[in-house]
Length: 93
Image (cartoon, rainbow, N blue to C red):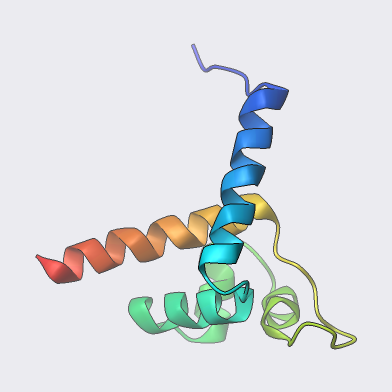
């Protein structure tokens, strides 16, 4: 039986995402560019892999303060970070 996430679980995920933001220089753009580079994907392919439209990915890649900038959801950011960690670990072997 699948465990339902509690508020505490969700708040821990958000806290981890915020900590990760600080540790990665706060740039979701750098994180997404790194994922694209490691996975050798185009923007369109990365968007499809993340389950977002190309326009949404481009909004995530827009500089902070730009009119079209959107902040990536914390859960999506965690997924991207995990993929980068896993791919980096594979490349070290």
